[in-house]
Length: 355
Image 1: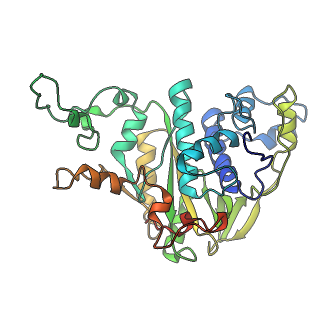
Image 2 (image 1 turned 30 degrees about the vertical axis):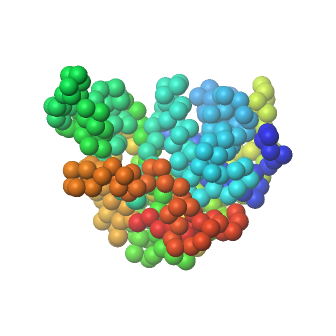
Image 3 (image 1 turned 180 degrees about the vertical axis):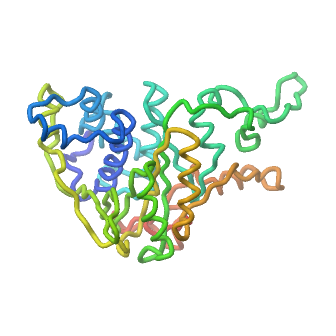
């Protein structure tokens, strides 16, 4: 991983690998459908060729700095440097989510990707943000909820085009042009998950929009894929495999490394202190139906609002809005009352609270 002399992500890359697995699952559903399964295909026809779209999906995640490997660990680490993470440093959930978001949305803008991604801050999903991401014409047209007061040159004032001050109205609504993956970084307790959140977290696995949860212990990330009664099923990224080369034998090499099973732990989540709350949806009705019943399974760990607060209209200023939006905040700046980082195993990101 030039210019750094790293040949493996063992010991520091588990959060990035968990994030790759989650994104891969979301993209697989989008490209091949929710019911498609690779093991069943190989058992029925051992010599069967892998579907071209699946091979393309695998290439996106191959460990190489090539442009076609859009979600490789090389590109993730390169983007992570913009968030003050050097290669070889352990990532927390917020930074990993932001890196995935940037890669996915860049892929969508440049190559017409199959997915958009949204990472809300403070545990609040804003419906107008979702609409702007998923309704294509809202990316190009300015909001029309008010008539602007023209300046002396006849042009509308710059603040009229600020989506925080003028969110889209009902007339801006339309059909979604893309599927959406929402990742919600949360802190659900101090040393362990608050038991009030457990029923809601377990209930979210029942919804078809869910693509799982990333969590685990401090410095040890895993990907939770489902639940059965009081047990959680997870995939562990700590099994190290050689990186397959991008040659004609690439699909065969990846097939040999395919995971053959999952691990099971108790469902009380007492050791899981960091989470992504993750949903994947392709239309507004599914998006709305997911959030409503999720709150019925106990204390919901996140909330939904129609619009971002209008701090300027309520007497605040844009600086306050920027501070509270969290979009550009470094995780170290919102540490929960602790001092500076003392090493990769004691990242300040593990200490903040987002409820």
